[in-house]
Length: 422
Image (spheres, rainbow, N blue to C red):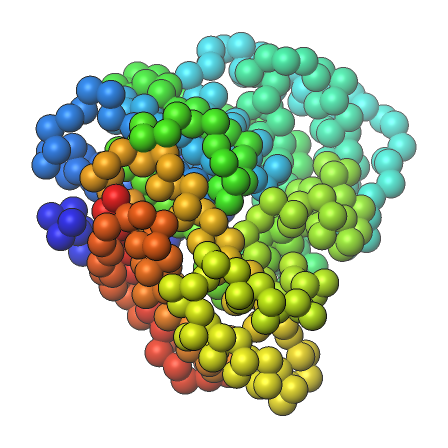
């Protein structure tokens, strides 16, 4: 496994914002597309088995791994359970669509929106706080035109993606580091919604042309699927898994897309996130687990957690006691218990689809809620061994959170790649 290590690669999505297709929608939870390409090619150079080679990303997010494999002409599969992010990734994978047809569809939508003089529809408070009157009117008219022009064409789906991808550019609201919308934080420069839509369409048009003129081939299959559950992918068919599961750091992947979901009318209140978005996600934040907190220690007795039972019991007990010293009393103990139970299920399912000798790479970070350390890499590696994989190795990339001045603990944290062989 050491032959595959790439010490100069990044584990963040930032670099992707300069890459065609990848930059269409900024998704904070991600990793470097160039690193994926380099890593897959390094594996292929060692194995010499490009024919029938299959890559899987069980947490596909906005499609970084799948697009990277398309660029290399390699067959890939991805799972994504977040309904909105699934649509984002699906749209990106339509890069081979006829460019002129896409441009015609998008222009039709823009012209109809510009000629719309109807009254603005109703929107949740979060939307009203994020747009001035003029831009909300333009967004409303774009959305109405989008729905009026709705059909089953790829050009329409790309036009939808252009619309949702420009919603932040036309909002005066700032955005936190992790993509949470901040209505009270004002941006200096805001584009009109019509201008932002036109710019996004132009960007997508040019990126599609670049990809289509390259050696890229559309080889990816994205599946709306929860990685904790049995998959339709054939058993013993995957050679290489490269992914980044949610970190156990209380980041709310549902809330990060609240503005877009609210504009679309998919949600109308905070409670809709819990009922419509979170059920298919790995339980990596305390907001997802409040109803299960009373059964926390019963969950720890699940046979899947036997390999780490004593250590995770100790950590969860400490977290349960420590929460009483904090005003929020966050249920981190329940979050940690269910997070590892979820990842244990993921490991079991991944082993089923992996060939003998397949390589798995998890981009992962450790955690220390309330200052109590959780060795994510070691525990996840041991759960993988219990699922039938043979060995694991952790490669540290960087220290985490060292620049944050408001950290509430001094526990050193790291990020890196957990390499597993099956």
